[in-house]
Amino acid sequence: MVTLAASAALLGLVGCAGSGTGSDPAAETAGSVTAESVPAAEQTQAPETPATSDDDNTNSNSATDGTAQQGSVDASEYAAAIAAAEELIGDGAFAFDLEREDDDDDDDEIFNIDVAEGTTVHEIDILADGTARIDETETHEIDSEDQREIDTAELTMIEAIEAALAHHNGTIEEVELETENGQVVWTVDFEDDSFDDLHVNAVTGEVSIDD
Image (cartoon, rainbow, N blue to C red):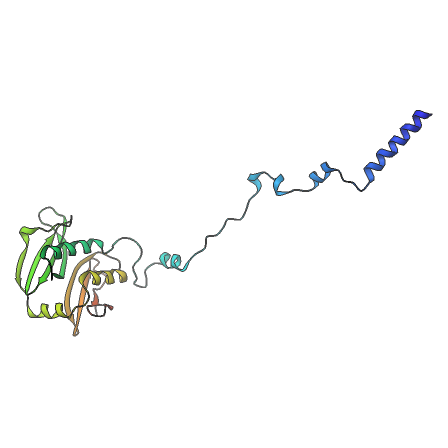
């Protein structure tokens, strides 16, 4: 009898423990899922969308408005050739005519550049490596029209090239200082025959398309 009573009392205590307000830690763990309990591979996040700046949008657009796209042609090779020609002549040199052509001797492209020095014009060939071909240099007296245009111009040839390339990105074949409709302009001729010449006003820098 004592044994049966003790057993009944023990069972009653166990039953009370199971139905009390206390909770089973194992049951709580099984019933709630936390970020710490999920494997790293299953913890996915939405990919971040990179912020897009106005500059990015501008660079991604095609140049249908006439502005230069990022890439291909820049003014550096022209600048190097012009600088080499003017440095050969020295102080007071002013390049006013440039033509890009094939070198008959080795089929390389060269720049044929006319540089004014006082009343003298030096015709200089600049090779692909930026050196002048001295034996081909010729000189002649400047004419009055060229002198007037040179005296009027405030933009250099390289500044005109930079302005033209900002408007149309392409290979330039010829740049010439001349007078159009009473205005002294740098006329820039591109290799692409489907694109009209550009005129860069030699005083204001304004760019216009040849009519």
